[in-house]
Length: 129
View 1: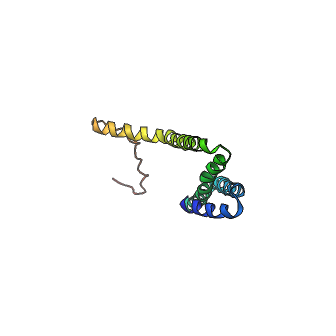
View 2: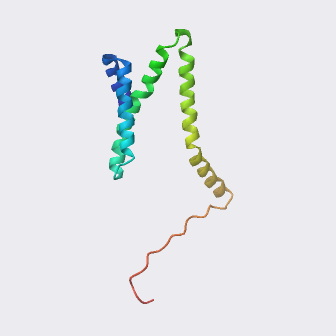
View 3: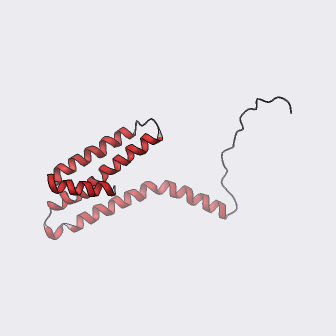
């Protein structure tokens, strides 16, 4: 995302924010869609990295385009609100994992670890016993 933010900022200064945003959104959505069909982990990692490259352009450029169309005195508040909403959404999506880890920690402190899935041993080809 950092490399994407630098690249899209530089490119958008040359070709304009609107076209830069459209190109970044196409890269973001295109590689994001392709990552759903990745055949292995290496392909998934590469496609998600390319998606992040596009996200590095869409996040800053959408706020810049949005703020351009507001009166100068009011441009900062909505931009800050949108950033706050993005943060709340990310926190909300990570909540199930955090709750699960918290339950593991509470159970361990209480001395009652959560039961693990039983481990099945493969059948032995050896005879005898």
